[in-house]
Image: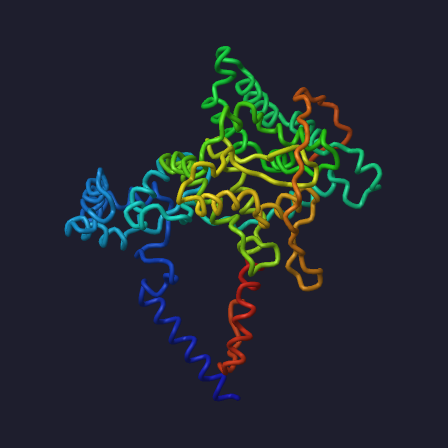
Length: 428
């Protein structure tokens, strides 16, 4: 036993010295650069300060202009530029949603990664830093207003979406930005044009990016027991301007329009990264992280790809972009798959329901496992009048550093692997 412990200590010291001596050993399996990942604006500055990197970056941008990927890779100069940049800070750079120079950051990210992808991939990697924080405090607040633990009869009579709007009116920033998008999205431009959709989208993006989530999430994901509440939830983004149109475009055409815009492309990639159904987790969400999925969903509002509730069903939560798969031709299967990521997505549905009910998932083994819900049966309900004038009277105020060495027999290895995903999710 003493010899084993001594061997373990010597091995640990040896590996530590190796890691200190070799910068490349500090990088994880997904990192190819020689520096830790930074935001793309800063990575661009680091590249510009180094002559070899900056010249290769200019070459790559010229290579990508007007050429498809195969043509670019056939050019030796373009290929050499790409190989050099894969070892630069630009390759691993990421962006933060809502950062001061977000669009510039995303443009830099895609200038590198559009040359690395295999064309029109179904899912693209997110250019945003992964969301590691949780919504425990906000979920706890939501549970108070959803009536969890209160008299069920009182909770059933409550309109939690109306309460959320009243709470927003008590916060100066929330009230100001909400009033702004309501005014813009309701303003008629001409008899043939009921509103300025582009300005409406911009105002909505500002609202969801700049207002704290304890206000925006309560309005967007509030729980409902009747149609009046559910219709208010559906009307949160004023769908007549920001969402609906005379005809539904094909979903793949809509995706193509979105991908032509760096900001929309990034939000869509982030949604797929954080809300794609995972059947290896308790909640059907990647890493059991509701926070990441809800944030990605909210981040898509204010674009042509804006998702919304399809009807005023109080409990049958189904969301979708304003599109259909009619006219897909031989791409119908791909179109249906894309649409199901919204309409039949257990991760997204569970995340919305959990927030509305104030029941954040707890991965502790002391608690019962979260049971994913089945897709509800959707029945169309008549729309209710749009009532957005809210009273501001609200009765309540809102507001291991060292691992143990195990025997590496096949059974033990399988046992350890079986817990890897759960331990990773818990550490998020």
